[in-house]
Amino acid sequence: MVSIILHRIVVLFGILFLTTLAAQAQEWNTDRPGNDIRDLDLRAPDFNLCRQACEKNASCKAWTYVNPGVQGPQARCYLKSPAPAKVANNCCVSGEKVADTSDREDICRDYSVRAVQQNDENLRLRCNFTGSSWQSNRDEHFNWCMSASRADREREDRNRINKLAECRSSGGGGGGGREDECRDYAEEAVTGAREARDLGCGYTGARWSQRYGEHYNWCLGATREQVRAERTARAQDLRSCRAGNDGGDRAEACRDYAEEAVSQIADAKRRDCRFTGARWQGGYNVHYNWCMSARRSEREAESRGRAEELRRCRSGDSEGDRAEACRDYSRLSMAQIREASRLGCGFGGARWQASSAAHYEWCMTARRADREAELRAREASLERCRADAGGGGEDDAGCVDFANRAVRQAQRNRALRCGFEGPRWRPDFDTHYSWCQSAPQQARVREDAKRQDLLNLCAAKPDKAQECRRYSNLSIEQQRTNLSEGCGFSGPRWHTNYEDHFVWCMDASGGKRLAEIAARVGALLVCTR
Image (cartoon, rainbow, N blue to C red):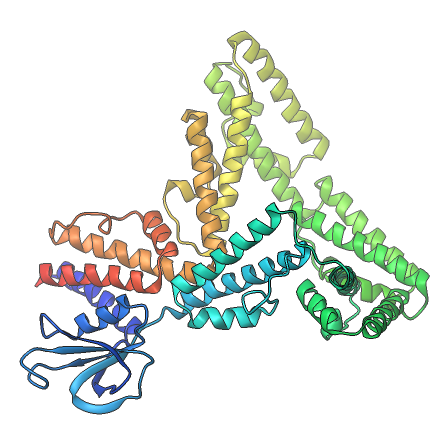
């Protein structure tokens, strides 16, 4: 009885999921008179047939379903564009075409970025293409895309690609004169804007835009006197920013200081030194600005302090790094011990005991030189054993790298909340190392690539990834209900492979996800009645 109730909950949860997504899909007791582009008789009294007809018609923006007996014995459907106003009338059910807004926005953001890049290439090659398709205003491209059909935006994109290909094949456009002058001006302006950004000058406005097309188009419409004045003003502002408050020497010194600080912070992060405090935080601008207000002795002391802490971290003297170094030491030790066992070397004593914890505890009380000597001693013994056995150590070293990488990938899976599970995603070194030892090289490469591909997919669109995590979990629960109730449904939509559901979902629109869940809900409702 409890099992049946739980299965009902899964089905009802799917219905709730559908209801949330489709809440605006139909308007009960509502007519939308006018703007008809097509009308048709329906084969059954089902408003969903009318809604589906609208979804399949690229021009349709809204629809009205008329109940049987109102305009004849059959139900009628009217497709409309644009969407007319709503009027209360119990004759009908109406609705607007449900657009997958989040997917459309993602698509149009990508489209607009690509369109601006294509126009930048048009300008650089001096192809001289003009018109609304060739502009550097990203918002204009985005707004156009949001109201265009998929076919229209694909046609626009394809046309730009083809025209640029023709222009490249012919060696670029002609032009010269004013176009050459403005191309040089735009390149110089972008270079200056990026330098101002890197220096933290804080300048804003059109003069400091980093978009090549904006400077180029402004130049084409400006007089030569205006262009010269703009160049002069930008150069003066940059000189002022470079000099700072106390002269050019301080600004130059602080640029060097900030670059060194950023490099040291990056080094500390790579080594997982886990330093805290203002010294180890912030980007280039933060350290540059601090330096400009500090005395020379203060910035030199700060630089020395970071260098000393990094030195201790590199040698394993800092507490956080010692723990990390000893985890690495115990992993390497266990890899050496497993290889010795596999080769049948017969080594004994504390150095060769098969206990990761014991090696870790010893390492935490040992000097760096001692633990390095211990690893070298084991490796020397293994070399002799390998020579006697005719074996080699490259395979084992490869498995150490494979397992370390697998652990990092598993940790990233958790950090991104991708939801991947199973042996492939365990953050356990020994699990991955043992698997690697018995797997051929080709299988290792495939496994590593599969994990990385899934992580890249999840990281590319984090918001959609969370939607797909919920979709995948619901799909698996629906399949478990199918199995436990003995419904017998099969096919691509009926399985418990989370990764396959997730990959399919990340490539599907909201409408497709909705339809897939609806199909499973409908089938399970029939089966569990």
